[in-house]
Length: 388
Ligand code: GLA
Image (cartoon, rainbow, N blue to C red; front, side, top):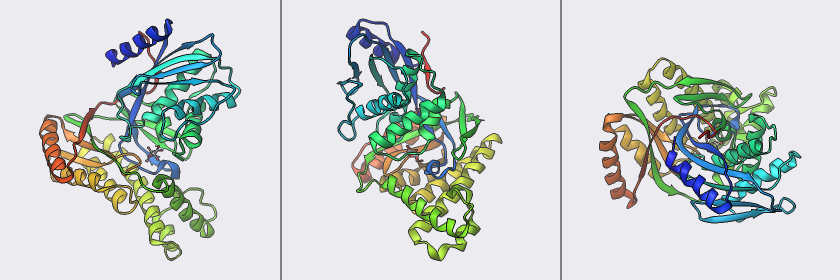
């Protein structure tokens, strides 16, 4: 269980604060399928992985809290009486955001010292931010006996993401981070947060993430824009079907009956959401039947929808998925996460991983003049206290 990483964080904490810390492990996540469906109250199939953030923390008798990020080599001091946002894009907003959320709940926290670091690639779509938010709340909950349940922890983290990081994300990342289970994916209905574990029998296959190492910065947050497109579609559908309370409860017949009232763009967004929810249901069945081939086909179909209907892919992601499609050792591939860069997720024969990586590396370099990064991943447990 990432012993070296745990030791590194623990040692750094003890050196800095001369105290023994409480240790929390908070994992990154992959999403097998069900992309951009969470904020449409739809279905997702995420799983937590063996890449994580380790958080070391202990009570402090000072009148400020001190936080140190090993990976950024940056410190943050928080005065509970004077909490303000930090520069856009900084990890500090995630921590300030959750502290503010805890204080808003009138939970009794006192000052603390905290050191964290990890091995979740940042900006790759593996939810390092949710891992940090949840991990910090989880640790403070234990340290100060706050009595928060998983759903309260999740909501504090989501509010931090919305109000401090400025991303109007859904529930998938924070929920899966807390509920992850080794060798299982989580079939989650974001409408009512009901979920079931789906056992992953991958036999001689493995999930391999390939990072494009690009993150296209587009104007006016395309993520929030996609959410608005879906809300526009739902509002128009609701004129004819007032009982509809989410895009994920509609069907193709209803959508087509209002087609002429929707712009092509909004129609395509809604069509994608309807089809993706169906693909998540089919994926669950395929995995339960150990039918990896059908599951793989659904991954390819998901990518097609994300690229052509939802328009959240980019040339680098499309290139890697096309490459995977042409290679018989990969039975499924798609872009993963918010999009516009980050990773593809590939279901690949274990003994062919090195061959495929070599090929992808040279062809990607040739096409874009850039390197890929690759991460074979295993499915691990969700956030927990580390018992040494
Ligand atoms: C990001 C968000 C999630 C989800 C995905 C897309 O990871 O944080 O809530 O919307 O994008 O599926």
